[in-house]
Length: 373
Image 1 (cartoon, rainbow, N blue to C red):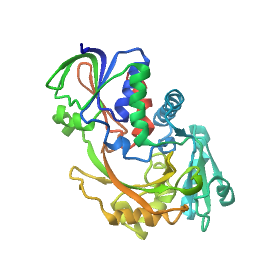
Image 2: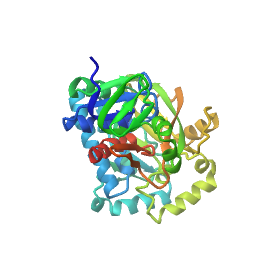
Image 3: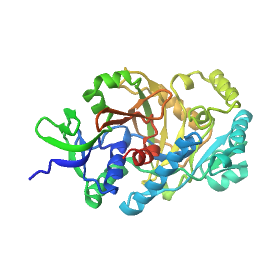
Image 4: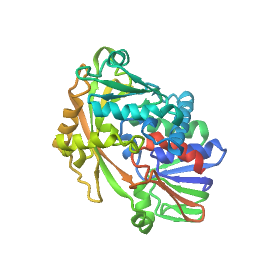
C-alpha cells in the first residue's frame, strides 16, 4: 500500500531539492521527493562540480557556503560520494589584477577567508597546469572542493533513499499544490510542509509568483576534455583575471574598476557573453572548462561555437594540460535573481518556494536548506 502522508514533501531532485530532503531527513522528518523526470537532468548535473566559498562575500553568505561545505564533507564520508578538497588558485598576469588580489588579501583573515598570496615560483609547487609566463602573483584558497556532479547527484539520491529513508517518486510531475496537499493528477499526498525546489515546477505551479519574482534565466556553455593520461592531476581548480569580475566577493573593491576597463577594451565580448573561465577536474580525470552567462527569458537552445572559442582562447592565457582536445560540449540553464542570492518565499501556509541560487547551488544549497528546514 502506498503511503501518502509525510512530514515534508520536496519537489525537484536537483541539488536544492536533495539538500532540502537531507536537512529534513536528518531531523527525523518523514520525507518524500518528487521529480518530474526519470532522473535529474538540469543545471545540477551541468556544472563544474565546484564548491566555491571564495566567491561568496564576507558575512552571512560566506558563512552559509562554509556550513554547506561542512555538510558536503560529512555526506561524502557517509555515502561514498567522491569529493576532493583541492582548493583553488586565482592567477594574476597583470598589475591591476595583483592590486585586486592584494586588496582582497589585506582584509581576508578578518573576514574568515583561508587564503594566502603566492609568488610565481610558489605557484609551480601547487599546480602543474598554471602557466608561469607573465605570471605575477596568485591567491591560494584552501576551501574549494570538487565533486563530479553527474555522478554525485544520483549518488546523493541513492544515499538519501537507502540510508535516511527518503521516498523518491521519479517521473512524477506535481500538477497541484495546496497547504498540506499535493497531487500528480493520479495520486494525492499529504505533507505538513512542502518545498518547491525545481525551477520548472515553480514556473508552472505558481506562474504569477514566478513572473513577479524578478527571476530571469541564465544560459551557460561548458566543455570538457577526455581523461588525462598517466593519472595526471590538475591540483587546485584554476581561474584568472576575468573571474575577479564575476564573483561578489571582489565586487566591493575599488581596485576592480581598472581590471574591468582593461578587459572591456581588450575584448568587449567577454562582458557581452559573461565570459569567465574556471578549470576543474572530475574523478575520471577529465578537465571541465567554462563558462559563459547569457541572461534573458529567450535563451537560445543552440550553442555558439564563437563563445566556446572565447572560453578556450582565454584559457590558453593561463592554463595548459597534457591533452587539451575537447571531447564534449553542452549548455545549462539556471534561474538568476539579479541582486539576490536566493528566492525563498512562503506562497501559501507551509508551502515554500526555494529557488534562484544564481549558479551557486553546489556551493550554497546544503547551508541554505539547514537554515530553512
